[in-house]
Image (cartoon, rainbow, N blue to C red; front, top):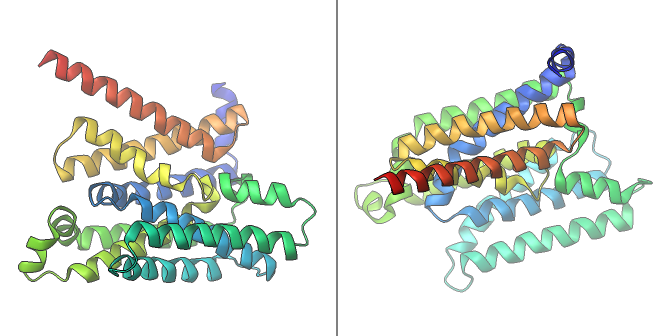
Length: 280
């Protein structure tokens, strides 16, 4: 098994897949803690459905680079969700349900009506649950992912204190002069970018797991925001790396395997936390 793994690791497309998987896992974990604490987890799920609808439209239009269409549409919907969720007539959860389910339904409808693909079910399944396209990345796609991931990390580090303040107490942050609405918008836009990046890795239906599980696992053992964030990032990268390796060796779907490893990590962390409480 070790010899087989060593042979695979020398193949360029496997190296590309691991680099992209690690970068996406790192970005997802950084904002995952904020989403969980702010109870914004539903935004990630809603935007993932929007990304599916946008990808379906891009496929129908036969666009050569889907990212150029899917990314702006998802970011625009992130802004729309945030603005609509603040409307007293339409609550946040209702706005997410309307936009996400509508985008999912329209995307599938358009694929059925206009798609020229002979394997429609396969295309839909791979978009929803991830596909082997993560194993066929080009250098240009890897560089694009690296650039966007670097931007996400830099934004998080630059605005760490503001994100921390907005996460825990919006009223106090607003009273101290922080532009809460602007930083909530920044968080929503960054999440939209992460979701578009993660589409090829885990698929639109499993993206939320990539964002939420590492944060929830870290919260079992750590209490400080910094501690949870660091642990979540390390755990997310480790789970993504292990999931990709298991997928390569076992021939299992990449996205589902990564999420399964994340679930196993959450269970292990929960057991450790329970044992620690017993010891105390």
